[in-house]
Amino acid sequence: MSKDMRKLLIMTTISTIIASYIGIFVNLFIWEYDHSIAEVSLYNMSMFISWGITFTIAAKLLNQFTIRLTLAVSALCGTAAFMYLVMVEFDNRYLWIVLLGIPVGAMFGFSQASQNLSIALRGKGSEYAPYFATLMVISQVISVGVPFVAAKVIDGYGYSGSFILMLVFVAMMLIFSFFMPRITLSTIDAQDNSTRSRFSIRMAFGRPGSKWIILSFLAAGVFMQFQNLFTLLFTFSVTEDKLLIALLNMVYTICSLLGLWVYRKIKIDEMRWLWIGMTLLAVGFLIVLFESPEALIISNLITAVGMFFFMTVWNAQQFRYIQHASPVSQASFLVWRECLMVATRCILLSLTLPLKGMGGTGFVLIIGVTLVCLISIPFFQQRANRTLENYSSLIIAPSSDKSL
Image (tube, rainbow, N blue to C red):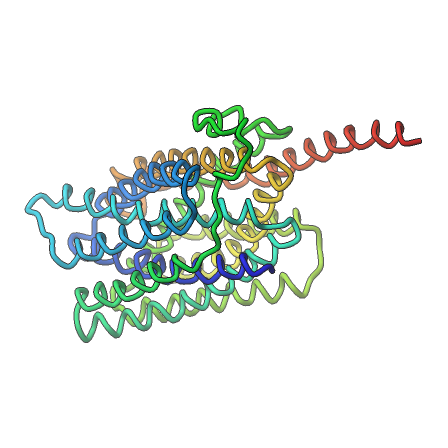
């Protein structure tokens, strides 16, 4: 990987540490109050709406500034979120939850926009798979270490102590933002300088196969939100002991690392890995219908492996799809992808608001919708790749004939 990509990997590592903590313990902090799926879903909905809005704002800021600014703003939003958790309380709990989601989502929105746009602008096709595979390994290591450290801090100093610890990592993120490469959209040709045209839907999806890519990440938003939300809630339903939660996360990580070993050991077509990942995820989602603690844990173990295969290939294919597009098209694509995925995430979350528990007809219907979306993704990706390859071959063939 290039020097810039390594710097991006370091920044992503810092933000992943913060995200790992928030993903488990902020959700657990909300869950412990009343064991309400609706409250956890409301927080996540508020967070993702804020995420989508700030992702778009960050992309527009990059028309004039570099990622140093947007990453610094992300760190400041993280500071606001943890200060809010330490200092603010309301009688109206729903208002408190909604307001908490805003700075958390803003932190993720600014950081994800900076990182994704930077990867698209500076990354090369051959770097995507190694980058995302390395990132998955780092994420798994973090998902072991952070929960154990946070659990010990919470046991010793309460949640407030862990919130203050996270402020230290936010400060590291702020400091490191000043050393990031000066990546920006402002160096693009003047003819593309109109902000409105830069982020138009035509600019984002003007490439062959775009309709299949759009369907792919719309479906991915539903399935990814189900997996993110219920992996946590399945674990919380088994135990609320912080150290046991950390131990379970370690076991999930070992399963993911096993997936990495298999992925590197067995050389098969990339699309086959996507289908294998999809199959494991589908099996994991179906197992939870047995409604026993053992089934919930087994489900998380299987989906941990499936998620590794799926996300490694899916992310690499998404970025590879736009690698030959202009920087403007890449930025537009990523902004629209994020916003549309946020929309489908929120649709899934809205379906979970009436749930009183992880069972019953409503829960089964949500699993059914998730499975339909999940199973469709490899099909959409395959059609998008095939359409783009056919178009590329048509472009190359006439050029070859002329040279003869």
